[in-house]
Length: 242
Image (cartoon, one colour):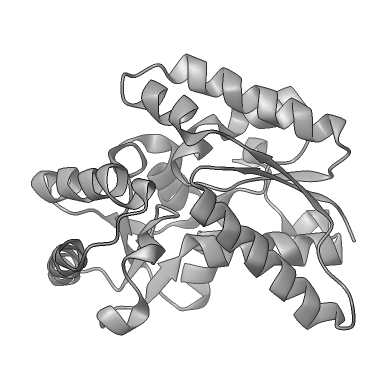
């Protein structure tokens, strides 16, 4: 079994979900006393968010590079960034560490395509929804058509993530708002929805909506666990392989 390096704390709730899912996957595959071999580098989320919100992306990238270098020094075989938005720094982490980054968009796109879906809705932070580092990977590499909420809805989705979910607040009112946004995306042609922020799964679950949901925490964690168990590097797409 290979050793996974998790860049976490982005949020700690999402990282806990990764840790649990990876270990459940290993237990299901190997049984007995088996659990995952992994190391977690956990950020103080404030160090990242305070820089994100004022556009200091060079600073956040350097922090991510340090995390990747630390995990390399710890002897891991591959890195999992336990958040969608900070995959903005995935290429930098891979270069700084010299290790493969198991990309969340690759894991998610493969699961979406396996369901026969070609038009996929994307929810996440403004950065994930509007910038190219994530959605263009879905489009260019996997041929998916990505459907976004309208601008006002995107701002509301982003607000709920940062002002509520990332601070441990789960609101019924916000859940209802997300459900309505998802319905509008369905009307726009979405055949499924990517929960492209690792905290959205705290708010929205499959029972809340009709469209199939793709929870990136579960998908990414299972994919990483399978890689660690199989050791099949040919099946994993490095950041630099775009």
